[in-house]
Length: 133
Image 1 (cartoon, helix red, strand yellow):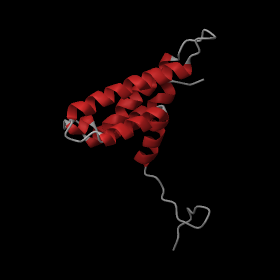
Image 2 (cartoon, helix red, strand yellow):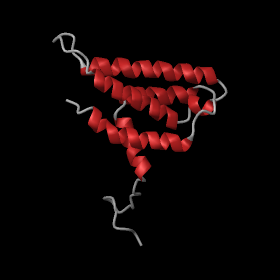
Image 3 (spheres, helix red, strand yellow):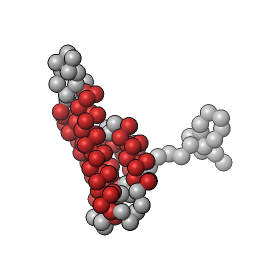
Image 4 (cartoon, helix red, strand yellow):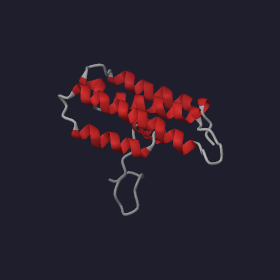
């Protein structure tokens, strides 16, 4: 028997778990270009190249700052970047990298439940820290 949650076309749609829903909201706080770039680069780097994973993560973190500063400001019209949005995206990226395969796992620094709790707390408090524009 197919449950009530049905997609158009008759296929059953899985209901996301609470942590999947929070992860989706967390990723939306990070520029999609950098998420894609990070994932492709991380997939190219061999797992044994731990230092390369760290360097790649730092490069992508810098790109998060650069992209968010550029997209939230306008030099031509003398509008400063929204540094609070840049900070939110930066923290979001670090938490996201912590929960993904990458440098934290390579150096055995990741504790899965800590990452999950960080995602929950961060996505809960972001609306109080940043209202957007």
